[in-house]
Image 1 (cartoon, one colour):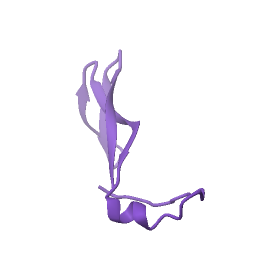
Image 2 (cartoon, rainbow, N blue to C red):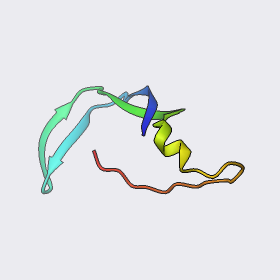
Image 3 (cartoon, rainbow, N blue to C red):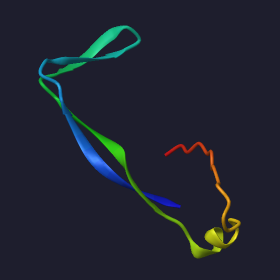
Image 4 (cartoon, one colour):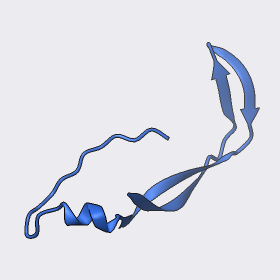
Length: 66
């Protein structure tokens, strides 16, 4: 299954400290971070759709690590 995503940019108006083991590693001045939001479009193989009984509500719970 594939999920369509929409990039969402977050501008931080301040410097951001990057740390490791309670030590400052670096500063990023006013960074922009990109997050990907669910676009609400799912691509599913026909073989999988055939396994879903018609007229039934289906909830799929998964966890995915990328």
